[in-house]
Length: 231
Image (tube, rainbow, N blue to C red; front, side, top):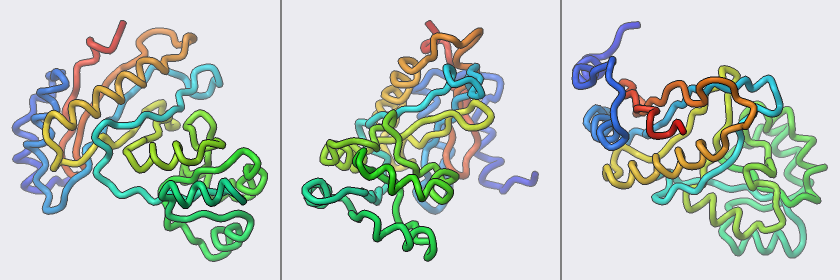
C-alpha cells in the first residue's frame, strides 16, 4: 500500500518496536496528526477474548470526561411522558411506530445513537436488519434501553461511547480529536482503559489485553504499553 508523503514523515517519529507509556503515545499521536481536518483519535485494543462464547463477550459504555469532540445526534423511541422527557433532555429526534417506515423504506439514518424505553423494544426490534449491522441497535448493557431517558441522552451528549468486540475480538473506539490537549486525550484514554479492565470476563484464558494502539484517522499507529493494565 502506497503511503502519502505526510504519513511517511509522521511514521519516522515513531519507533514501531517500542510500546510507549500512555502520555508519550498521546504526545506522538498529536505530533503525527497532519491532515487538513481535525482528525479523530482512536484506540484499537486487541483482546485475548473469544467472542464466539457468550461469557467472553465484552460490551458496555463509558462517559469520556472531555467528550469525543463530535456532535452526536440522538434518536429516542418513546411515547407519552417519556417522549416529552426525551425532548426536554435534548434528544434530536423522538418518535415511535411512525418512524419505522421512514427508516426501513426511506433509508433515513440521520442519527448516531438510538435510545429506547423497554416498552418500545418490540417496535425497535422490527428495525433489527437495518440498525443491527450499523451497530445502532439499543442495548441494555450500553445503557441505551432504559426508562431514564434523561440520563441516557445527557450521558451520550456529554461524550458517552460504546465499546464492544468486533469479529476479530478487537475493540475500536474514538477518544477525542487531534485538537484536544494532551491532558484531555490522556484523561479520556484512562477512563476508557479503566472501563475495559473492569469489563474483563472471568473466563478469559491467557493475556486479556494483547495490544493497544493509538492512532489518528490518517496517521500511523502508536503502540501503548499494556503492562499497566494487566493485573
